[in-house]
Image (cartoon, rainbow, N blue to C red; front, side):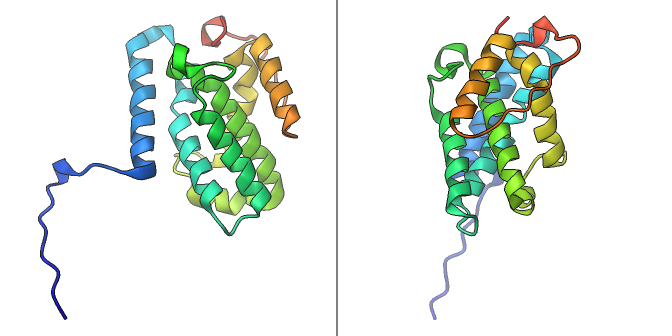
Length: 183
C-alpha cells in the first residue's frame, strides 16, 4: 500500500469553501453593514440581522437532508431561494444587508410552520445559534411587525399566505421607528 504524502497546512492559509464560505461571507457582510451604521441601526434590527447567517445555514442543511420528507425539504429550499433572490420585497441588491430582515422573517415563518410537522429534532441538530431555535423563531416572529413596519409586514404576510405559511401577528406595544426598515 502506498503511503500518502504528508502535507503541511498553515492554519492562516485555510479558506472555507462551499456552504461555510457562504456563511462566512454573509456574516461578514451583515457585521460590516451594522458596524458602518453605528448607532443608526436599532439594537433589535442589528440583533435580528446577526441571525441571518445561522438561519441561512440551517435552511441549507435541512433542504439537503434526505431523511426529511420531500415537502419539508422543498419548503426549506424555497425559503433558501428567497434569501438568494437579489430583488424581492426589500431588495438587498439596492438596500444592502439591512434588507435581509424580511428574508429572515420569511425563513423563520417557514421554519416555524415546518416545526409543527415534527421537524424539531432535525432542525435543532443542524442549528448553530447560541439560543434555542424555537425561542429564536418566536422572537423573530414577535419582532416582525416592529422590524418591517406595518406596510411591509402586511406584504410579507400576504406573500407567505400564498405559500400556505402563516405569520403570527404579534404587534409590539410601542413600535420603535428607528428599528424599522421602512421608516
